[in-house]
Length: 259
Image 1: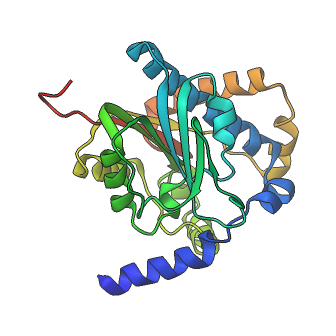
Image 2 (image 1 turned 90 degrees about the vertical axis):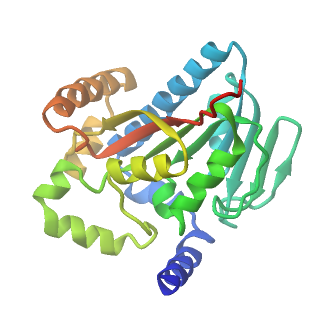
């Protein structure tokens, strides 16, 4: 067990401490991929927006795997304090320590944040960590009572991966930066083990097209693409539940007897 952990840490150090997505975004990501990421951001912002409305106040947000802190710009109108944690020296060149915006070097496994956050975000991050259960447990500690944890990532059990198993396995081997490959149930189990009450599991991105088509279709207006993706996800999730290309899980920290 200890040897497995050491191997994961070694793989993490090799792939994450110098991680930089600049080349991937410029050379490999299709226009449709970029639209899907933009849509994912809008979905997460909608979840945070509901928390703001429910609590009738802006929230404190803890963003793990924050990169350059780009999500702050998107969520600025919903939050009163943003703290981003990022391990990569290439993504985070200089730490920033302000009153409302903090961006610092660290990991989800080693962070020791006080319980002052209303929302904790792991956006496409958990499968890159070397100890996912520890990361989720640390999120629990960092959240206030009734705080919410949002996790999004690609789905190991996407229907097209189950159809093209050999190709899917090959990609898992090639993508060394993905230390784990999860399905929704496995993440849900980790969250519940840490004490969270899971509220929603949303399966997304059922649409999968060849790259050259994604580069054509992805040039359509955001509103049209988002509408099509929403319709396809709603339809396909009824026939193939939890088999989309990705998923979003929200879970709440509830301590009975505390307000």
